[in-house]
Structures are given as structure tokens and as C-alpha cells.
Amino acid sequence: MLCSILALLVLAAPPQNAPVPAKEAAAKMTVPPGFKVTLFAGEPDLVQPIAFTFDDRGRLWVVENHSYPGWKGEGHDRVLIFEDKDNDGQFDAKTVFWDGGSNLSGINFGYGGVWLCSVPNLIFVPDKDGDDRPDGPAEVVLDGWDAKAQHNVFNSLTWGPDGWLYGCNGILSNSKVGRPGASEADRVAINCGVWRYHPTRKTFEAVFHGSTNPWGLDFDQYGQMFMTNCVIQHAWQVIPGGHSQRMFGQPMSPNLYGLLESPADHIHWNTSEVWSDIRALGVTPTTDRAGGGHAHSGAMIYLGDNWPAEYRNNLFTCNIHGNRLNRDRLEPKGSGYVIKHEDDFLFANDAWFRGLVVQYGPDGGVYVADWSDTGECHNYLDVDRKNGRIFKITYGDPKSNPVDLAKGTDSELARLHHSENQWIVRHASRLLAERAANKPLDPDAVATLERMAWFAHAVGSQHNERETIRLNALWTLHACKVMPASKRLDLMIGDPSPWVRSWLVRFATEGENDSGNLASLAKDDPSPIVRLALASALQRLPIANRFGLAKALATHAEDATDQNLPLMIWYGIEPMLEFDPKNALNLALTAKIPLIRQNIARRYASFAK
Image 1 (tube, rainbow, N blue to C red):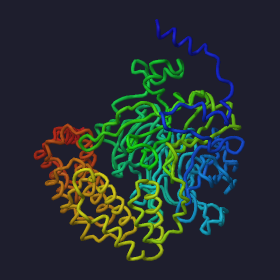
Image 2 (cartoon, one colour):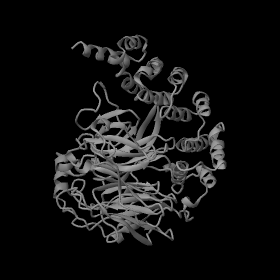
Image 3 (cartoon, one colour):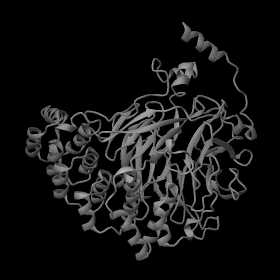
Image 4 (spheres, rainbow, N blue to C red):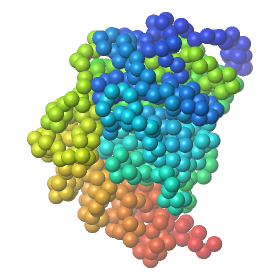
């Protein structure tokens, strides 16, 4: 009865017929003590901000999307550059970089230009001379994304620590992606999940399948990827080769016999309601207390140097119905994590607030894009194109040192891998990878990175800090293709850090690999973190080379209750059954993980039908 009364009150409440005026919106927001919110940019200087990124000077590149929701491809979407020269949290200069975009939904910067999601294409607009004007027409790098995806289009272009460009894909986007002109056989099928593209190898891969409408990617201090999702659970660890729960439809691969669950131990709405009740009831008091609703966009794992230490490595996402930023804690568990709910971080106190993107920048301050609209998540039928804001959130007085990383020498960029602000590290790493693709790096820069990577990590209070510095250096050495194979093998087998060993496993299966060494590591390595990397690697090996590694992984009885390992091992084993039934049967006899034995038996039974 009480629920019904509350629902009627929500429905009866008069709608807010206009957003809080842009100049008043920051002051209306509620944030923890010590934090300050400023309006970085807003209407009329900016409308419909669907995505943004930073260049190596710390300037904000923003996509104005005028195509949604029809995706008509009329060529009115724009890419704008905003610069805050005095670091007061408000832009001072605005440049229109490009005004001929269509269906733009994602952006990132690098390799002499900007990368844009432009359904049905991934495009690249060059600006090698850095004069903020395109050097020529946009290049279609990949095509085949489904233009019928509505609000599930591909998005969230994000550079990974390994030098690949990652992105999300929604459940309505039944896409077959490849280079322009590629045959059907040479294309990669993907709908909901995560993909990646290598900028110099020109290689496209599907990384992770499942979810609903993911919109937001980021990496934690150990390089583990997480995505934000709408409708069903809001956050997932993106495990390469993984298949997660989905809102509907069948997985891309048959015979999975199980899907990975979200590591989040909570949802952001009343557990006595289904997510669709919010459409009818609005945000009830119980849903408000839980986090605001089921619709999420944007993902940031804070690794900047401005906010207090308690927020470091926390996951932040925009809650669309709740008009706020949710905050979660990443807590290690077994091979992965449990995602725990912390107090919500920001309340917009504006019913029109529709947060889409959240990222930290060069001074450690955090930027949030607000689509500013009405409707369930946004208004499909009567789109208000006059609004849009980007806010900046800082703690105390942020550092105001000017940034222009592209002017740094190779050695200077290498030394920046010590920075507490991962924004600095990631940009320095990408710049070195760009340079290494064209000519050898300065030997002093390589030696600097090697010194960071090779030293044995310390114990005690310095442990995590030094371990993350080592990872920073290892990722860049790999992206620049200057890591000696012999050193990689030594570290993979004998390094004291499970995170270092796990990443070296991943590196080993991106090019040449030695399945014998991987099998030996799987047998003896004590860490479930490393065994998860090996389980992912299993899928990248030729089927004929998988048996030794699969057998070693399946003998770890202690992994039987792990949240990821039994299914991840099975995903790599399943194709082996048809290839070599005899060896696969022997694997069932030696496996000490019940799910592996059960699934092998189930798959064999399917052959007899």
C-alpha cells in the first residue's frame, strides 16, 4: 500500500519543465566536503555532448551529437576543442575542429589525429601538424557496425595500457566489423560487449561478449578493464575471452553452458522491484537510497592526483535516472574482484541531469558530461537540442602546471611513468608507442623504462606503488615492441608480482607463444590472477596446442569455486572436443574442477543426438 502511495506521489509530482540554468547548475550540486564543482562549458557554447577526450596538451575535445535519435547521417555533428588557459575550471578558448560529422558517438586522440565512432564506421580525422584543422577528409578505418542499433551504438573509445584502442558495443548492434571492402569471412561478428583495434597492426578483435548496452570503459591500477552497463547489473570486469550474462538473445558462441556473473554485489535500485518498474514508478525512495536506478553511463576508475587517497582506484559511473554519480569500491577476490557500493558521490539536484561521460584529466580534476534532457533516460521523441554541459570537480586547489606532453623527449616521457596521475602516464605511453612505430626510441628512454620494470618490488608500504610503476613501464615496453623475449620469459616464470606475471602471459599470446612454458606456469603458479590470464590465453592458442595448458589449469581443485576460472577454462576447452575427442576425454578424467568434468560430459552427450 505504501509503495502504491509513493508511486502515485511520484507520478503526480509536476515535471521540471526546464533544466537548472547552466550558470546555476554547479552551485546546485551536492558533493563531499572539500570538493568544488565548476561549469567548464555549457549552452550556448556547447550542446548535446555525447563524448569527450583529452589531447596531449590537456585540452578537452568534445563531440556534439545532433544525429540522435534518428541517426540520419546528415553531417551536422561537430568536434569542438575547449581550453582552460588559467586553470580556473572554466574554458577560455573554443575551436571548432570539424563540423561535418555523422552519427558520432565516441572519440579519442592519438597517432596524428582523432578517432571517432561514426556509425556504421570507425573513422580517423588526421591533424598531423596539430593546427586544429583536419589535414584532409576522414578515413574510414573499419566499417560494419549496425546502423539500426538506436541507443546501443558502439562507443567509449579508450586506449588500453597495452597500446590497443578499445570500445563498447550494445546489444541491438548486430554488427560484422572489418576493413572497408572485407569479405564476410574476414569480418568479426559482435553485438553486446567490448572490442579492440590496433592502430599499427590494423587488427580488429572481439574481446568480451555480453551485457546489454555498455557505455563506459576504464582500467584499474593493475590494468584490469571494467565496463559500465545499462539495465541489468551496472558493472563488469572485462576478462578477455569472457562471456557474461546478457539482457536477452543468445551468446555469440554455442555450447557455453554458463555465463560469467557481474562482480557487483549490489544493484542501484530497489531489489523488490524489477528494473522496468522505474519506467512506471519513477525513482522511489528505496531506489533513491540504493543508488538511483538501473541506467548507467560512463566509467572512471580514479587514478588521478588531485582527489584524496580514499577515492583512488574507486569506480565512478553516471546514474541517469538518479541524476548523480555512483561510487563503488573494487575489492580483490580470487581471480577477480567484488564491486562494493560506497556512498553516492555527486547529486546534481536537477531532474534534467543526464550524465554520460566521466573522466579525470591532466591536473587530476574530474570532468562530467551532462546531456541535459528529459524522458526515461533521455527523450526519444522531442529532443531538446539547446542544452548540454560539462562540469569539472576538483578537491582543494589543483596543480596548475601547463601540459604539452608531445614536446617532451623520449627520455622525459619515460621518466613520467613515475607520475601519480595515470592520465600523465597513459598519454606518455601512447606518445612513445607512436614514435616507436616510426623510428627507434632513444636508448636512454628504453633503459629508463627497463630500470623501472626490472627491479624487484619492495615489501611494505611501498609495495603497491612500486608494483604499479613496474606495470606502467612493462606496458609501454610492450606497446613499443622493445621488450626482450628472454627477459619476458624470465619474469613470467619467476617474478614475485602476480600482476606482472599475468600481463606477461597476455603479451606472450599476442605474437609468438610457447604453449609448453604456459602449461608449466599453469601447473606451478600459485596465483589465481595468473591462472585467469592463462585461461584467457587458452583461447588464443591453436586448438592442437591447447591440451597441455588446459590439463594443467583443470587440475587446480582450489579454483572450483572461483567466480571466473571454471567457466573461462571451459570456454577454451570446448572447441577441443570435436578436434580431438580422445585427448578431451582424458582431460575429463584428470580434471579436478567439477564444472569442467560435467561440461565435457554434457558436450559429449550432445554429439550422440
